[in-house]
Length: 394
Image 1 (cartoon, rainbow, N blue to C red):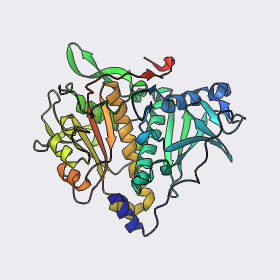
Image 2: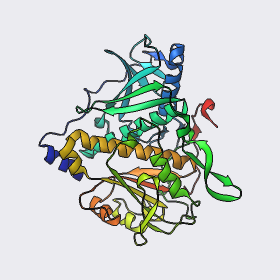
Image 3: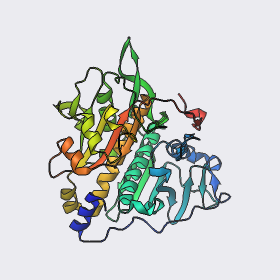
Image 4: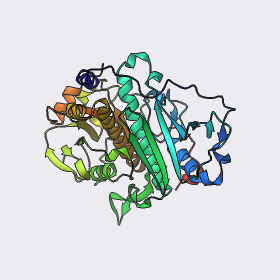
């Protein structure tokens, strides 16, 4: 069992259960209504769902080859999104571009749309055991953050909410702030550093390309990269779970122009050097896969998210732990999208020896590891079919 989840189990004196209702079977392809056939008042909600959820590209050489705007372990897609009106619901089928299961369209105004996120950890192989729960809640945070980014790009807001019974909903509302987009990198008067470029919802997210084991380009990253990523994590759209409290952010950085190698705090979007001692080799030693499978030490950033999980659980029960996972997943989504806009990969990971990694980033004894984001620039270029709709390209 995942160590943190085991502690939560003990502290809540109860059984860890899977969230939501029993798994629903995906309706047949012929059932439902195409997003393009929805009434005009649903044009923007449909566009928001498309941008957040539709597959972006297909990599024929990859064993998990469908890629969307957010990551999913083993491309299992552990979170279903449904449009809900009262007792009626339509499952979003992002592959077939339709609302599945019903042939009638929603009758609401279209200015407020309720989405129900149903979690399915059972879609992962049984060997994942209790870790499947953790990965599914992290993915749900990615999905909620992707919806928030997509909504902001269309001038709407997407507000996530988790109640005490662990029912997770996202509400789309007309009206929002288009100025929250965190953008990528470009030349600025000949200086290579953080600047304005492509909006992150349209960025081509990647977890890295590793035909013979994943490794990073050994060249340095641009000046200002870590600061720009830290700002992306904390200047997120309103309604994203990334704004929920309780997380701590530290990063081991290496080979970034103008930046001393070492350990940094990233809370609040600032980058403050703690120590020049930790290196990416310390993160490598904390990783549970060997270097020939994942060359962590050769990457540029090891972003570690921690939280005081016992204190949160004592105050709010199991739902509080899930809120922390949702927030960590949302941070991972916003950082990954900003990294993609910069031409970098961002690989979220839980495959670590937690105590070793916590020590490597000088986390206090009360804090537990939640998420690791490995960031760098890919060595090879991939061969992929781009599935991004032309209308969202810059």
